[in-house]
Image (cartoon, rainbow, N blue to C red; front, top):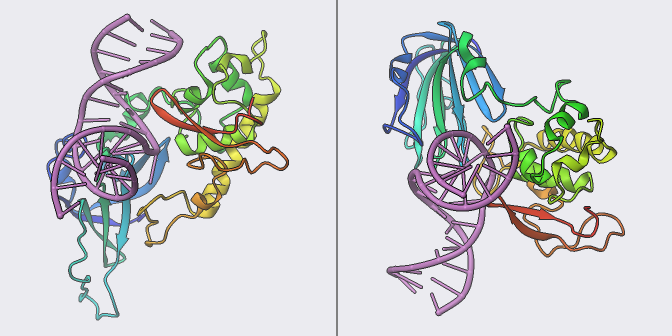
Length: 279
DNA sequence: CCTTGAACCTGGGCGC
DNA sequence: TGCGCCCAGGTTCAAG
């Protein structure tokens, strides 16, 4: 996608979760895409005019890439007919190395949204100013989380989903990381911190578990559920490796544990855990 | 400031 | 077949 130019941005409805931002449809006209990025669960597309298109996939959104089929003489490209799918809401018509390319945003549930922000104001934008550190890279340490959790009575499950504490974790990976670290999702976040504000051992384990879960999920190609696909259309396979998520009443996979995975509801979200080995 | 719960919107699965 | 209900990957706002 880098070094592609936008020939047109096709909006196939007026809104997603929110109305498309003012001026989004006019973003075309040969603007160059400098690069793609991510912050927490927000995807970013940097343009050469200093703006960033920020998109969030909500719960059901996805991007896919389509290229013209077959071989072709220069200047003669054609896409397969009838490739538009239900819930294709936004289509980037791109030109890359003189070849056309389509990038399509699809979102059945329309919980996703896009924003257009100036790059220089990105870090001060309300959506991004209060995000916690990224778990991958070297930005996150146990003591940073300890500082955030000190004195907090909220369950550790809820604290990990709170993007102000740590960026980018969703319900699946929080459940999986807590199981790996053998921490009960109901445990109060503050109990993972010593009186002097340092991380206790379980919190140290939790950091490792979070990094491992994310690394393995990326390695496996994501956790796509149901009909969600990667950009080439194949399914993500991390879902086949869940230890507790969506495995209510299954045996806890930890060696010799013998417990049974349970589902509870915390802050309106399902939590899956093993009451036997997570304390 | 902290915490919880509802709202946003659509589709799939299930029981009746 | 159809209807109603519950559930779902997330964020944000209001209220206690």
